[in-house]
Amino acid sequence: MNRNLRILFLFGLLFAGLGMSSAVRAAQSIFPSALGSQWHYRVSNGQHYSDKITSRSAQGFTVLYQGAVAYRMRWIKSAAGWSTPDFHATGSVSPESESMKTHVTGSGGVVIPHTRFWKRGKRWSFWYTTRTTGSTGPMTFTQTGKITVRNKIVGTRTLRVPAGSFKCFVVRSVVIFAGTQAVAGETIPLQVTTEETQYYALGVGLIKRTDGKTTTVLARFTPGK
Image (cartoon, rainbow, N blue to C red; front, top):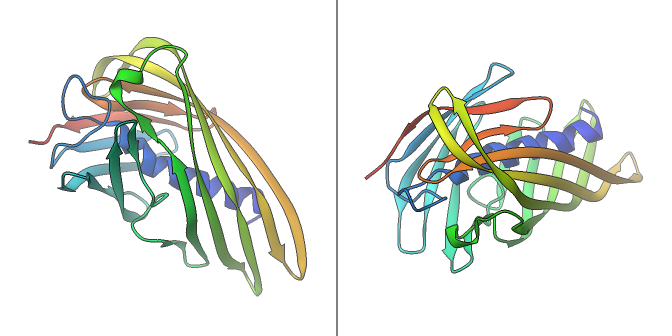
């Protein structure tokens, strides 16, 4: 796997986990919290995955992601909104494949702002610092860096997906990875930038996400209690 593909793989896992992060409990919320809420998504490449809230407390809740891999994400609330210190899995170390592991070394920012901030022109960002180790055949590598996600609400739009028709906020996101990779005694600077558009609906959450190569849509939403 070349270095850019490794980074894009991390981005894919990040957004698979964060994608569910936008489902909700009530019509006035952008983010989920009802125990048992479940979302099923279809991806244009033939894959599919689901997210389910499996536990809840006064501080936040935990979501089980099940797709090509399975993991849990903790979400923590604040006055500004929701964040997760776990990047895309519970704990500081998460297996991504037989030959790759990512350690989260730091995080900051709000992933999903409080509902009162959702209006055209709103900007926010969040970040993670990571350390990934792995191997390609007999060769091992270490990759360190910072992932920064910059978001902006650019408008509203009504969308129809398999789960129904929804009036959505349109969010443009720019994802930047800046870091280095050490392999075979050589340190290589890395910088990769990707962009995607996400659509969120009050009372439901993430409706659609596209990065120009693949598109993810909500196939079914089951609210919790």
